[in-house]
Length: 504
Image 1 (cartoon, rainbow, N blue to C red):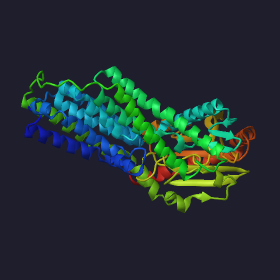
Image 2: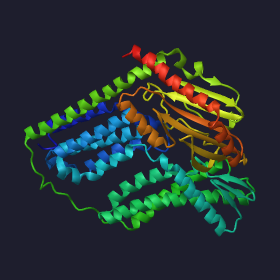
Image 3: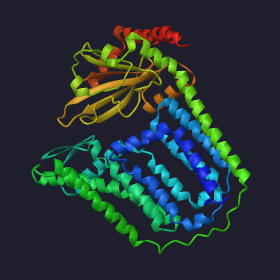
Image 4: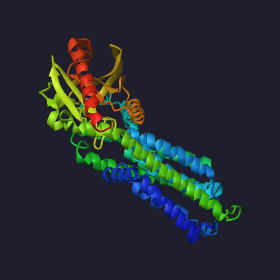
């Protein structure tokens, strides 16, 4: 069937509409991130760019013929399975990536191997719609600090680095999250990738420029951080420490992008070879309808399984909200004056129940969640174990106390105040210190129909590390901690044992 025919366009439109219905939650969440985040605002332009790249070859499209493939259906089934797992675990970025890949595989199924390979770049470029990459921020902060210290040493400026803090004779500087350069890296990568496709014919040159578009903003961000320190140091902290710091950053990276394209243009190829419409196998209309039917069945099954996951967790969610002891954090959460509360900045939003208390000089925090609830989840980017805007992690290690793992974190702020805390996540009867593993454990628990709560437990003490470790170990081996475990077990068993039965 010719791609330009109204029948094929109607079938493609129908498939995309069904895709949108199935993955609406992921698509809507993706757009919400584009709207509120400067880092991913470029997501609005990815689909128009992909459509433009397709329309650049509209003469080819007019004569192209679809040759559907069952391999696309197989890939779509696998992606939908991943989506359901991510849905059960509330892993938003994986849900969004699965949604975009599902759209790509739908197109691949309908147009076939040859056309999909011919238009591989416009299809693959859709992946840039997914707002991912923030997990690179800590590594980018370290690289920025490394480059800054290297440049300071080259210019003979004495400095002392501790973690992400760099002390100069004129003052203290912190390589904060905003200084990581993540937004410039992602923007340069998105722009550099499409520039490489339009400018170069050979794959090695395209990959080389894409690598250049990754390396250049990283190195440039380190140089930018050094120049800010240099200007502030030489001006006795009069310049490059306030709003001019941000304005300088915008101007600097505008120059970097222009320079990147200027260098890339020096090695540009002289146009692309014209594509021909020959060599594409014609497909029987009945075969295409068979593939359309398989796509629709797969998407409808995904909707039904998604509803089943909701049904499995509905009892635990609504049992939690029905229990008067687990209504809302503001109503039931215990909150006493804590020695390090203002400093610590731990925050877990929309918990079914939470407590913040001070016991024997140690600040204790715990928050409980159903594995899947209407509003709120144990692990997401809003929840934080400390305030990243104030604190920088100096060290991190794993402790095992009473066969339970804890992550011990030492923090320091720009005023050289220190704070130490440890925490772990409880999922079912297991304990985890890694967010990703805890998230997967929650997904497995939801898929098994296990209605037990998950929770985070943390202790904080604004003192030095060695002393804090001893205090923490004393508490975690004390009868008081045993009472804490008893209360956790009681809350998780009694509430769920009594309340869930009402809904089963």
